[in-house]
Structures are given as C-alpha cells and as structure tokens.
Amino acid sequence: MKKCSLLLQFLLNVVAVLLLLLVGDVPTRTEADSSAAAFVQNSIFSNRIVIFSKSYCPYCLRAKRIFAELHEQPLVVELDLRDDGAQIQYVLLDLVGRRTVPQVFVNGKHVGGSDDLKAAVVSGQLQKLLGTS
Image (cartoon, rainbow, N blue to C red; front, side):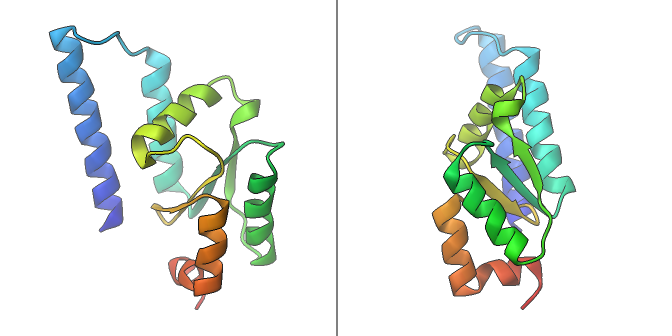
C-alpha cells in the first residue's frame, strides 16, 4: 500500500513539474534532476534496504551499524561520493520532506533517519518490515 502511495506521490510530482514547465512559471529542471529522481525511485523499489548516507556522518554510521548487527546488507548510497549527491538530496526532500541523511527505506517503505530507525528496532517495527519477527 505504501509503495503505491510513494509511487503515486512521485508521479503527481512529475505531472506538477511538467505542467509548471509548460506554463513557464518556474525555472527548467535539468536532465540531471530527473535522472536523480529515477535513480532514487529505482534504488528504493529495486532493493530490500536502502540507506541514503554520507560517508563521514556519524548518524549514517549508526544506521549502517544497526543493519550490520541484524546481519542485513543494505544498498548504501554515499551522497558525498557522487556527482549527483546534491540532486539526490533534493529528490529526497520532495519525496519524504527531508534532505538530511541518513534516509532509510525498507521494502519500499520510508523508515526515516537514524533516530527513527533506532525506534523502529526497539519497537519491533523494523523486524516486521524485514520479515524477521
């Protein structure tokens, strides 16, 4: 259900941007922006676990450690090591309302940041999302 909601939200955003571009009231979005959006969507829906991260961020390290302790191997997208990292952060802002890292997705569902992830572990919600409880 949440996958459909995220996909619908994404599609509505795309339609809104296209309409605004046709009207000409906003600056044009670059091709890099749309490829970043496609990358984010593909990453979320093609991988069981995705962490949008920065290699030096202590909160990101905490999120990665949580999954390591659960013997899970997420796809980790290190935004500071990518040329399109800034665009990806803006896509995340459009998608989940935050551009901070980490941003964690499990089975297409947005879990949140480091504190949200830790709370999901403590409550058992993460294990349910992973299908390990």
